[in-house]
Image 1 (cartoon, rainbow, N blue to C red):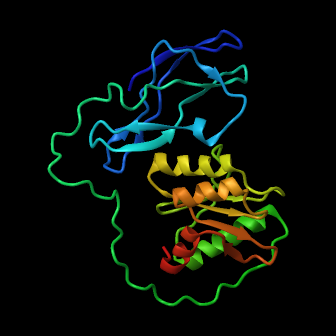
Image 2 (tube, rainbow, N blue to C red; image 1 turned 180 degrees about the horizontal axis):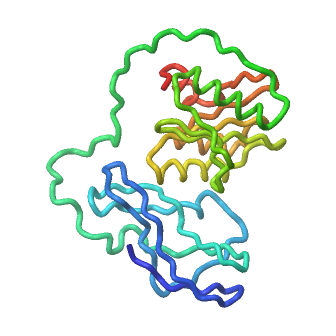
Image 3 (tube, rainbow, N blue to C red; image 1 turned 135 degrees about the horizontal axis):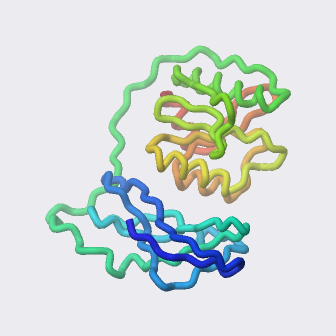
Length: 241
């Protein structure tokens, strides 16, 4: 993994930055190629285009969207680290190009899950009860080992199960785009699935992004019944754990 020296333009503090690696669908670790010598840019306004870069996997040649590298300086500035365009110096293409391109994932047929009893909700009055309601729902879906961390982790994971991490947003405002993306990144780095529950629903861009990422979104009503709000959530209900 290549590293570059970074100087914060706000406080002039020097850092050494190495981009994180994420697993490509082929299994190879992939990281954005940072651009040496290019000035960093403080982030004052976020857009979806600026938050993602196209990166080519050196192993299989696949091009995918990956998070734009960023560095948080102790002074409070968030710095965007420039990357080399994917067409430049990404290494040779894979030697075997005899087979036509194939989709990254072909879902296998699944048998219908056994019928489940009706979900029995409990009213939600507190944040603790909201998380408990999400945990009961996941167990109803077939996740038998749902656990709640003793202390909420810095990455805001509220529930864990085998192959699954879950966040439950109990704030009075709709869940924001950045919350959805952060949960997805946490799941990506640990190769698990992410699921989101929210008491106040989701911002329009957050829901659109979750649809693109295949993240199930559920809205919790005061009666304690999770309601699917996108297609991945509907699919999770139909297939179960």
